[in-house]
Length: 263
Ligand SMILES: [Zn+2]
Image (cartoon, rainbow, N blue to C red; front, top):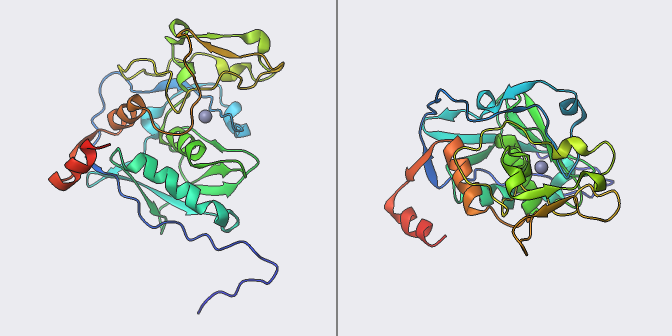
């Protein structure tokens, strides 16, 4: 029997976008002796930071908070709140940005205990890694697919690029310009760098004026003329980073290989 919607409710129903399949096949994760991601327990976002995450001061390993591979497929269950009906397309676009280049899939949650729960928020925010249970991803009115993709990378286990240990070789952090109370968003962590180079083009990099208290830059790239903080696409290194963390391998089949080569 169809559910009747209240006449006061003008929000379209949020139905999700079914299953968005990753292009690559994954293989069961083999954990190396050195942890892939060992980091300080701060998450944060341009975006807002879920309060309880701020209170978590101890180190934790994201490797233990990855989404599981089942039969060679990493598929994140999701639920989109009814109130986010007008954001469903943006969320689905963000899924595609990731799935088209990796082995990560997304599917509508049925009975899974752990899932991404997209809820209405003031800004865009996510926890880092799989937390267990319904895990909120906050979507504000200004979150577009690129912002949402950034949040999904947090949920997959990634921290901000400017928090890498080697960041001082590539950027200058201007603490004198940072809003009071936001300094911790700019601290370097001991997160694994996955043997990949620093990436000023990463979708996980902060922009020049993030959390500025005075309109002056908070982060300046040492490469002249380099723009940082893009939220439009996954950089080549972002793609590699996801594939490495989730052990994506091999093209699913030859027909997809030719499609892949054009990406
Ligand atoms: Zn972020």
